[in-house]
Length: 104
Image (cartoon, rainbow, N blue to C red; front, side, top):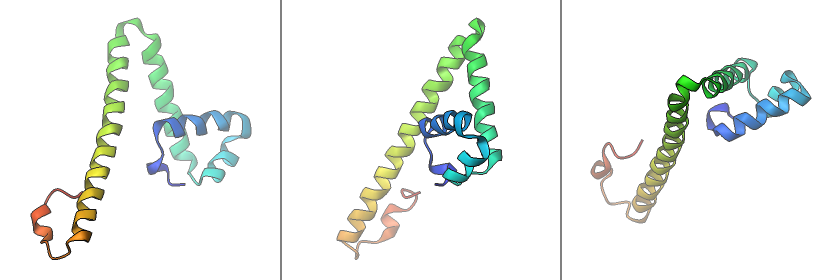
């Protein structure tokens, strides 16, 4: 499993699993390097600290709101690209240049 295709939820589950099964075994199971795992743990810890700080509650909420919005936008872009490629497959004579800059 590639670490850049994992959702935030998946990463949290992997971190939780590593608490019980060990970091090395869990990282091997999912095919991720330990450096990535520890980066996730660091980010989770930073988020927890923000959550517990009363002065930074708004920033913490903004962070997670923006993170969710970012995930949604990435999915929308993927869907748009799939639709464009599907339309091109239906009409291969249609010039790809019409979609210049629209496919990522």
